Length: 237
Image (cartoon, rainbow, N blue to C red):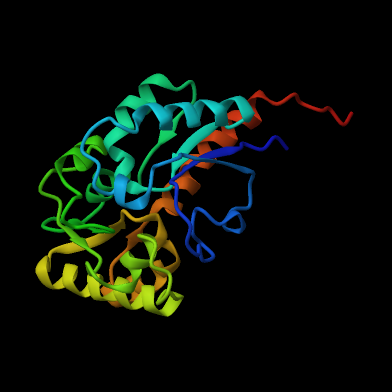
């Protein structure tokens, strides 16, 4: 059976990527290709407000397409800021951010319920990112603890990093989201590195949780069906 290959635009960083993380190849049961973008550090991209990195991400995506990628995703939800631009200039479908799911999921919820977002940086995730993803600009957003081990690890301080430490920070942010916004009926995880903690977040919040991997599975299924449809048919009789 023909298999679709996914191209993943990575940031320029180095930290542990636990099972389930998009940056861990073992998280996938289909082929993936990676392209690292020099200079696109976690700090740079999670505070981005202009098109400074659009050209290098575009170049990286085109290289992945040349290598055989049937679709492109990224390793940082803040790249929703470039969704329209990347989709408009690449020859394959592009899904830049888990935030693309916010508008979809909100339409599924009971009256009066909203989608809440957990993000790496609650201070810098704002209107350009939500607008890029097609989400309401008043979407509730809560960030990870500013000086906690999760954020520090992704910014380069690996001395206190661990799965348990990251999960503790993720649950602190979850409780803050549910307390500040009690109408939250579902959660979207902007940060791709939150995916290994999605089950714990779901258990803590008691609501459905969506992340970059729920997006990728949906995205890849469509790519897979398209590739399979183009594959030559082998007749057995």
